[in-house]
Length: 403
Image (cartoon, rainbow, N blue to C red; front, side, top):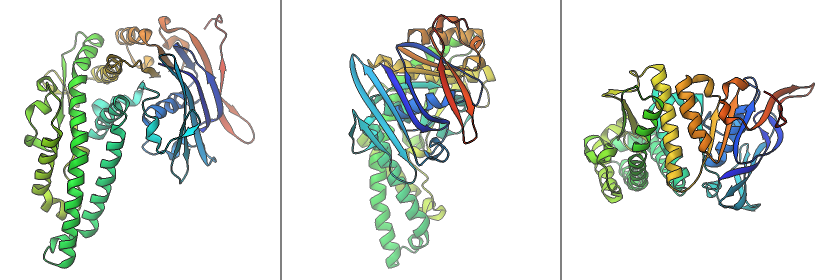
């Protein structure tokens, strides 16, 4: 698939922009802070309904504007669809497919599929578990769009349950009181829903990791053949209650049993209930899980060198890209100012993958950062300042203009 047109209104530093794109590489050149990354971020938002840089939508709306709109014309196997999403400050977001409103923005997921590699991805190796959970869940939503609804339902139940534990903890500790009995009964209801949606999310993550693991190993070996081999494991808050074949992707040969996982979650929630009531927080569930990345026999976090960490982060993104391709969808590959961070071998490996992509969008500060084999359509991104405003502007190079 590829995006034929990308249009933004009041997105970050862009008051208005309408770009015609084509299959193959497109390079956006400009100094740091000019707005190159914002273009890729906008397209990634259409793919995942989230930003790779910030947790909330508000920073995406241009300063002084009430809303922002992202529009793309996507071409997939000859079929063309126009999709847009509007982020409105203080109000629910809205989305359209071919100018027809959809009930929920998440219904647009799957129309634009992309994989983005950015400097922030170093946090996949060195950062907190939340960074790795988000990596899995974003890939999961791209691969199976309906899982976005499961994630939303789980997050909703988690918030409600956490609020109950925090506000009614004292009452539940007095379980023989009328208030305590009522609060405990309500907690039982939330436990059931948390286990139901949590089991679906957990099963989907486990299955995804089993499919992803061989691509991670292969991608890392192609980038850093002289390094130790890598492996990944799922670390659940269920601990030893989770079957070992669910933790180790190499031992997981079948779909995860959702009913089994739901029963395990319910059982373990009952076990930790006294601690949760005492502390007023949810201590168990997919929101507490992690993906353990190993380099040889050691955890990559804290052991891998800077170069090895970069290689691992790149391998994770390339693995996601290759998995989506294996599913029959050609995702857009987006590389945000990453070639400058890589040595020659890693540049060559990444360029070889990018050259095979149906569409690849690249940002770079200087032309020399982009490998020669990825030369194609080039755009110049600069900042325009006038008396009223400071914003980004884009111009296209002539095809035969030397760099």
